[in-house]
Length: 288
Ligand SMILES: Cc1ncc(C[n+]2csc(CCOP(=O)(O)OP(=O)(O)O)c2C)c(N)n1
Ligand code: SF4
Image (cartoon, rainbow, N blue to C red; front, side, top):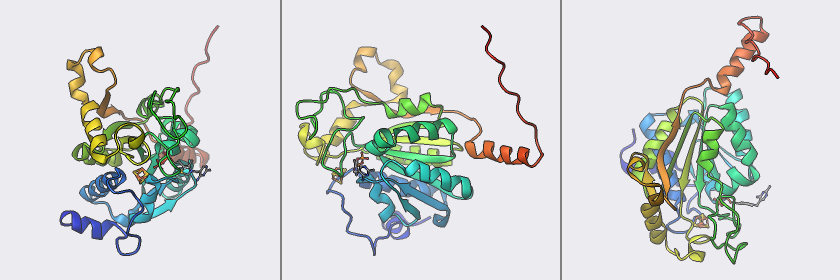
């Protein structure tokens, strides 16, 4: 294990080649990257056995800065590259970083189906509720009423709940956190990486530059305070009345279950094709 944060920076970041980074001062992306490298270090993974895959966006720059095997792929397609990679290189720990636009707009279909297939990988969605890199256009996770460059009079659509989508699609592990709750984030990312099957960690992250300043939260501190005030830990929800949960969101582990991963199922298909193993019975036909 590396010693302290400086040790981690030297071990896991391309600090001599790729810095300074492009992120705005105080951007939540730095906290997510910090949590990720701390989680990997705690697990003790060989960094040459880790593949970090990202799409395009501010969050997508993590593959430039982190010193793993890295793939910086087209906007919305990170999960497709990661799926192919994991199927051909079972030995790699595959981690995918996406923005909310990447994962739920242009790449929304891939997200649902990667969860449904239960591909053995970890998806980290940095949900800053806006298209950060391209100038603050609304995304499918922009809250109702919020102002963005493309909703100057307030957002009229209702936001996707990314984590609920992953639960509905039967992902093996689903968690939500914020960059304010960095210690919890370390734990959730660690558990997600350790989990067999598809894991999703949604991280509410501050984009004070594009989202905050149009919504009365122009500084990182204001946005972190908003996360602190509106996040409710899973265990605390049982004590809260529905009206107290109004406008709030749950953080912690939202789903954790066991089922064979896509990789395991695919291996069985290979065995059957070689004449080994039994072909499963098809489901009984529906009557009527
Ligand atoms: C195919 C394609 N369409 C559109 C774009 C332009 N584009 C780049 S980043 C981006 C959105 C970024 O938002 P998000 O994924 O939420 O990431 P963030 O920058 O907020 O981290 C868009 C639309 C692109 N690069 N490629
Ligand atoms: S535009 Fe927003 S998401 Fe992008 S670096 Fe700046 S604060 Fe971060």
